[in-house]
Length: 96
Image (cartoon, rainbow, N blue to C red; front, side, top):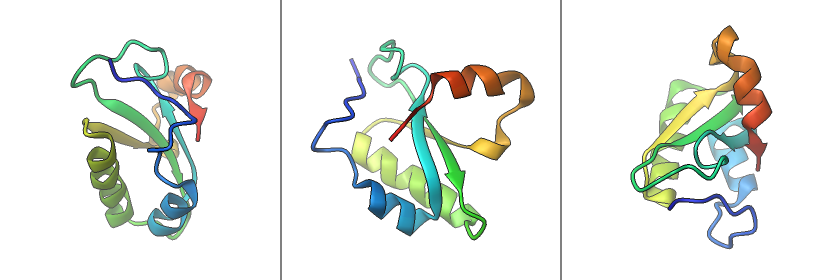
């Protein structure tokens, strides 16, 4: 079962992610955080991109994280969360 361990030495360096992909904040939410993920479960990543970020940053981050985790990743920009999902997602997210 896929689990999130904030102390894992395999965790990508946060500063590298922030600089390379123009991120101001990044977190994990959903099945992985609730310890309900199984093999092949998508990893939900919430990202607050800086103003200078582009679609290439979004797609590049997704590809990078899928390579690191070896599982499908869904990168959700924080400003793109639908109103009805905002509260449940923001109460679930663990920022890394």
